[in-house]
Length: 107
Image (cartoon, rainbow, N blue to C red; front, side):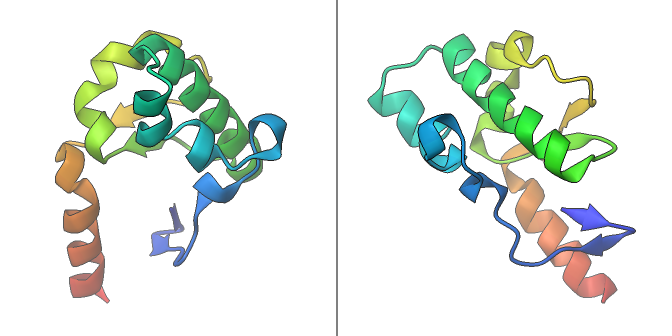
């Protein structure tokens, strides 16, 4: 997460409590999708719940999705119903690495 162009270090939004108080990272993770044999739309609904919570807590201008599931966004996009714009990172799974390198070079 960035605020006024500055990276907020060590922020783990996946640790926020979700369904039944368990962290979202356990409820809306790749591991949960696979182990519970969730369809992409089913998993997308869980991810949407996470985005709703993150939206309320952080009030972002938009979300940029990177990581492994960014390549599969088209499979769960219809489950995303939050009003805040959601974009897929141009560099997909490599976005975090590129962003971290750029932030390091610019500091």
